[in-house]
Every structure is written in C-alpha cells, then in structure tokens.
Image (cartoon, rainbow, N blue to C red; front, side, top):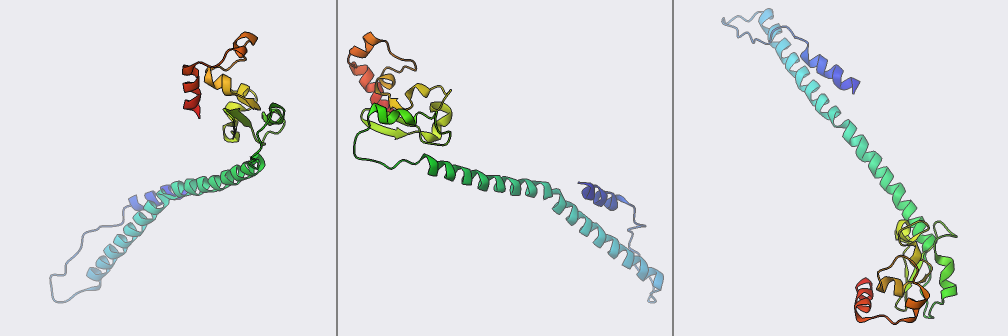
Length: 178
C-alpha cells in the first residue's frame, strides 16, 4: 500500500514542461533535441508508473484470493478426514435400536450419526450441527425416528400415543422426508 502511494506521488511531481519544441530552422540545436528527449523520458516514466500503480492496486485482491484458495484446500482436507471417520460400511442386516444407540454423536465428535426411518438407516454426519448433541434434531440421532418424523415432533411421545398407529396424514408426512 505504501508503495502505491509513493508511485502516485511520483506521478504527480511536475516534470519540467511537456511542451514539445518543434525546430523551425533547418539547423537543429542540442537544446531542441534535449527537450524532446525530456518529454519522451517523462512520458515513459508516467506510463511505467501508471502501469505499476495499476498492477499494485490489484495486489491485495490477489493476496486475498491466494489466502482463500489455501483455506479452501485446508477445509477440503478437514472434510475428507471427517468423511473417512464418519464412514460406516453399508450392511444388509437390519439395525436394532441397541446397535443404533452408540451412533447418536455423543461418543465421537467426528464419528457417524445414524438415524433410522421406515426401515432405512441414514448417516447424517454432515448435519452434525442439527443432529448432534445440543442440536435441534438431536432427538432423532441414534434411534428409530420414524414416528417422530411422521408426527413432526421434536420431543418424546407419551406412552398413550406410542400405542396408536400412524394415520394417513402422518404416513404422508413421513414419505415426504424419505
């Protein structure tokens, strides 16, 4: 930034006269040519200083882009490591409630978070902020959340409602999630 101001200051320093003296006689003296040479040098200096100023004015933007690119590479590495830690091999055998319970996000901060709904198990590790401990939907994690999703609830059902089957509108709501 300081260099930009110095270049701008350099461009504003008066450089003698930019008037071009055209020789009127057939004899050209040294004074006429020295003024033409001065004008040419001054013009070159202004062009070079202007180009340097333009190039330097974008240096902050280039530095920011380079920093963002570096952060993006670091973020990709973090995401890939989390993906590796949260991976669970798909299986053909159905999951039991006891097998799902350890995958509620409380035991391993980077591990998988599993939610079961309508007989399918979903790994929702990317939504850790929502489904992990303290998240709005943490109640769904590590369990069969079919009834909660169908009833659009984020708190436990009472014993009486657990015994009632899902009505058609609740089943439609569940299908909307799946």
